[in-house]
Length: 86
Ligand SMILES: [Zn+2]
Image (cartoon, rainbow, N blue to C red; front, side, top):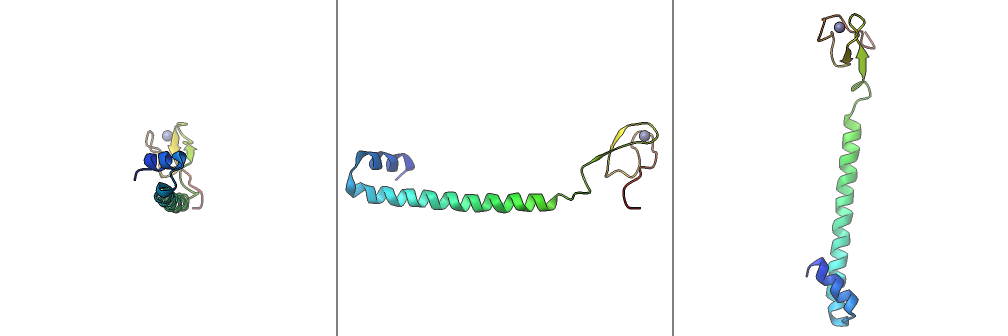
């Protein structure tokens, strides 16, 4: 039984078919719950993976270029970038 058929049976008030439709509805809800748990796990994993020290931009003291904090020196002029705790 597809979800569409289940909805059709539930709205047609055919009692004998309703039990099957009910099973279908319960299965669908259980699937949604497990999807939700998977998404929550992934969201948590992603947020934990992102270190707070990464992903910000610095400005090169020599040429003024926006340089990602991962760079130790400016990719344009080669000037040393000052990165946090040295
Ligand atoms: Zn530079």
